[in-house]
Image (cartoon, rainbow, N blue to C red; front, side, top):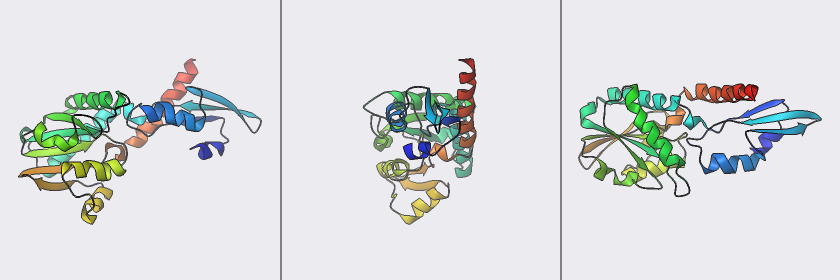
Length: 223
């Protein structure tokens, strides 16, 4: 990241963290890597003043709840899962270092009903309770739809979560469906389990990134 920033000559630079929450990485690691001093950092670049704006992470934007709700709604239709027979599990990363991931995941899950999701929904996490590996104890619904509240299909979304659920992420077929943006399905303990790609691969994320940069620009104009 520092190498990329060093090569930019623009007078105004907007850094948009493509992250789900405003946690340790967004608040500590990213500013440290870019040598930022606050929301706006000024420096000299080839004899000219350059201003670097640190935006809020994309995952904290209000549109994320709608994006996730729309994705879940389309999946329920495609799978022919009746909402009354389905439990949606929204899976966040979680952390023992801070509460940002837990609180933001809970907030997003709590807002899904506002966008038309009628199926019961719960939250689960990789790194703190309630753990996604305990999904069988969280619901007795015959259909379970797992929706990761993560930005990318990186190792957590592509391997850790499906393995904890009981799927086989090492299978070539699983990864092929995931790479194509499809829904992986399995029958586990007599129940139909469907696994969605990470929320951050939705096309609407481009709009969220631009919205974050515009908001930082507008805020700077009010200072």
